[in-house]
Length: 448
Image (cartoon, rainbow, N blue to C red; front, side):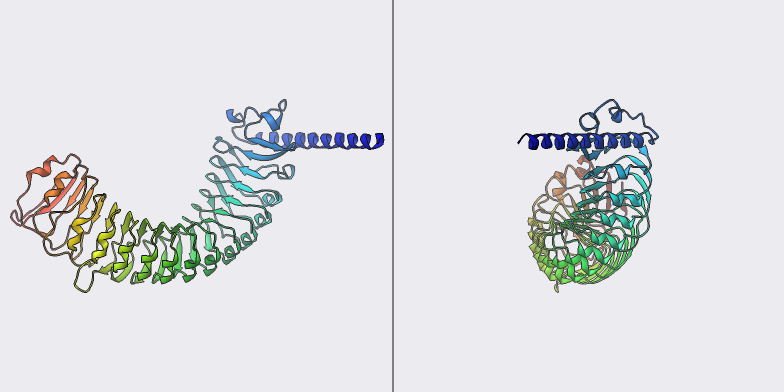
C-alpha cells in the first residue's frame, strides 16, 4: 500500500512538472511572437511579461490544465505579421485575432492547430489565398476570415470541415466558383460569401445544407439560375442573392422557405413572372426584387405576406390584374413601412388603398401607368417621409391628408394631370426638402 502511494505521488509530481514546463514553453513562444509586433509596446498586452503567470495574469490568455486553451486579442490595435508560434500552442481551441492590423498570408502551418474549435481572423489586412491545409482542422466549428484581402479560390478541401457551423468569407477578393463540396457541411447554419468576385453558378449542393439559417451570396458575379434545391432549406431565415448576374425565373420552390424573413434578389437579370408560391412565405418581412426583368401580373398572393415591412418591386415590367389594377389584396399589407413599385406598368391604384394602415414611411409608384383620380383620403400616418407618384396620369387635387405628414421630406407629384392651385399649407411641412408639382391650372412645373 505504501509503494502504491509513493508511485501515485511520483506520477502526480511528473504530471505537474510536465504541465508547468509546457506552460512555460507556451509563454516563451507567445512573448517571442509579441516581439515581432510593430507596436509590441501595446498597452493592452503590457501584462505579457516573463515574470508573470501567463495562465492567470496575461490579457486575452485562458488556460486549461496549464495549457493555453484560448487566445483572444480582438480589437487590441496590434500591427503584426503571421509569425505565430504554431508548434508551441497545439492545445489551442479558441483563436481570436479579429479587428486588428495583421497582414501577410495565412500560413499552411495553421493546419497544425488540430484542436481548434473557433478561428476568427476577420477585419484585418490578411492577403493571399486560403491554404488547403486548413481542411486539417477537423474539430473547427466557426471559421471567420471576412473583411480582409484574400484572393484566389475557395479550396474544395474546405468541404472536409464537417464540424463547421459558421463559415464567413465575405468582403474579400476571392474568385473562382462556389465549391460544390460545401454541400458536405451538414452542420452549417451560416454561410457568408458576399462581396467577393465569385463567378459561375450557385451549386445545387447548397440545397443540401438543411441546417442553414443564413445564406449570403450577394455582390459577386454569379450567373445561371436560382437552383430549385434552395427550396429544401426549411430553416432558412435570411437569403441574400442580390447584385449578381443571375438569370432565369424565380423557382416556385422558393415558396417552401416558410421561415424566411428576408429575401433579396435585386439587381440581377431574372425574368418571367413572380411565382404565386411566394405567397407561402408567410414569415417574410423584407422582399426586394427590384431592378430585374420580371414581367407578368403582380398576383393576389402577394397580399398573403401580411408580415411584410419592406416591399421593393421597382424597375421591372410588372402589371396589375386583367382590369389594369393592382390586386386589392395588396391592401392586406398593413405592416408595410416601404412600398416601392416604381418604373413598372402596374395599372390603377385600387380603392382599398385608402384603408391601409398608417405605418408607411416610403410610398413610391413613380413612372407607372397609374390613372384615374388621385385618392385624397389615404389613411397614411405621420411616419411618411417620401411620397412619389411622379410620371403617371393621375388627375384630381393634391391630397389634403399630406398636411398631417410632419416628417415628409420628399413630395413628388410631377408629370401628372393634377388640376389644382398651389396649396399654401405645403409651406407648413417642417421637414419638406424636395417638392415637385405639375399643376394644370399653373401649366408650368414648380420645383423647389
